[in-house]
Figure 1: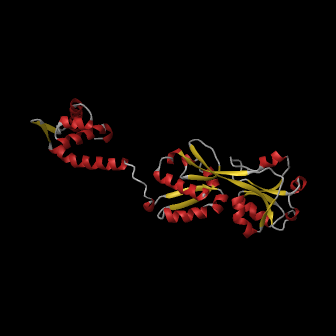
Figure 2 (figure 1 turned 180 degrees about the vertical axis):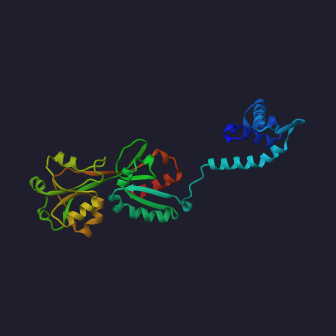
Figure 3 (figure 1 turned 120 degrees about the vertical axis):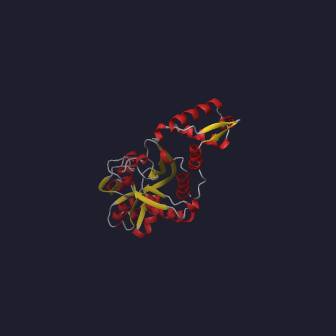
Length: 301
């Protein structure tokens, strides 16, 4: 007999009837009428080919077949109830793998701190970090194994987005760049510079976050190289006369080791808005919520 041919609600009714040994009491416990219980038993008798229970006075007596089924029903329904209960999240025992798609800014500025915090607060969990290009190639967060996107604010179907911080943008060059000693650059001097542009995912929604800043100031920008990450752009300007725009958090992490400095410019103030995004599929998950809270503390604080 196929399980799909039986209404599983009938098995619950049989379980309660066998516990109560009385149709009326079983009906009261199930919040149905005694006739509904009797009808359910009749349907089960037809399906299983066994009387299941017989009357004895005001109670009932189970058949050998029902006695055989009783412990199986009790165990199965107990396991099902336990599985449906949302247990409190236990950070100390969580062994889950949390996957974060993050741009290089986050990898440099936040991931080291996140790793330290995870060892302290989620000691048995595993952190998996992938590049932002992995998020794009895998599709949106709803069709991948990525729990969280951490980076420039994005949009998409089924996404929850929480702004985290705004990171001031800086025009940077190598420490001994010819323009470094000029103080604040004039509009003409700024227009004469040659730039490295960052295009993290060519042709995708992230694009060039600084194009609008130069357009707003009506200052042309001569782009001679395009790099896939801010870190790579910083490495290039460190050994050349080129300049690039960097979020201040990455500049702070890289300036000393690469010998970079920020240039004073007539550009309007620009900030890069960072957020974390996750899909509806993990929105209510207790472990995912705890992980997002940890990421929030690391990035914002």
